[in-house]
Amino acid sequence: MNETNELLASAGYSLSKSELSDLIILFCIQKKIYKIEDINEALMHFGLKPIGRVIEK
Image (cartoon, one colour):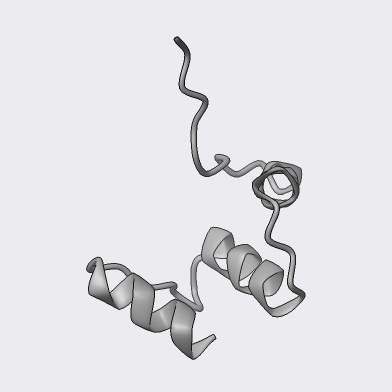
């Protein structure tokens, strides 16, 4: 978790403990759920916007 916070901070970001989407991402990190598809499924389950995007050629 410390490494995650350091990485995010180096890019000017942080995860909030008051935002539902950030809490879901924190949960996934703590449970070692790293596949973007699984994280997006959890976010969409709560009606939240998925992270990442599909790049079309």
